[in-house]
Amino acid sequence: MQHLFRLGVDIDFSDDDGFTALHHAVLSGFEDCVQELINWGSDVNAISQHGSPLNLAARKERGRVISILVSARADKARAVDFAVAHGQDVENLRSLLHLPVTETTVEPLSVDSAAARRERALELAVANVPDFDESVAALIQDFERRRTIQDLKWRKRRLELAVANLQDFDSSR
Image 1 (cartoon, rainbow, N blue to C red):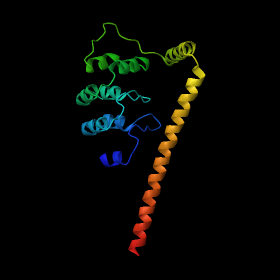
Image 2 (spheres, one colour):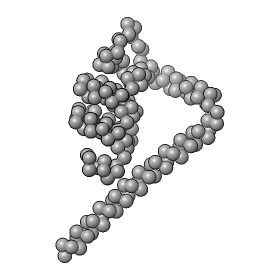
Image 3 (tube, rainbow, N blue to C red):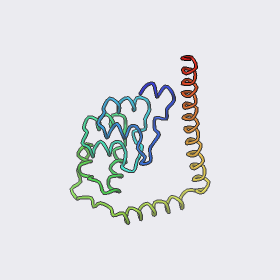
């Protein structure tokens, strides 16, 4: 992994589900990989469709991985908020994170109520943020620029490998 990081691989590149390398390492229970990814600056609070690495570690009940993530300042509150919003087992998550377990059971949100909450949050954001449209446009531009840079890095690396293979082929003749 260190070799890839030295080559400039985007450590927080995510797949179609939003999973980064850290999400995959957490799911697999590879504690050494989790620690190495964190050491290289992986975002411990990156959110995928299934939550943060902390959500995944709690769901798989990987106590040691949870400890590693928490010591790297994974956001416990964000993990709990995600669990509540997506109908996950909040009480188990609170227990694994050593948070006080609430006496009342938190009702999982239905898809409709979760969508309604997101819509209301967006309405509030639009109402309270001056130049909202410009802010969103700037975020989209930044995302596209970062994605383009990553694509260019990968293309450059593939070309370098192709040139190296051609040179090896020529020298073997």
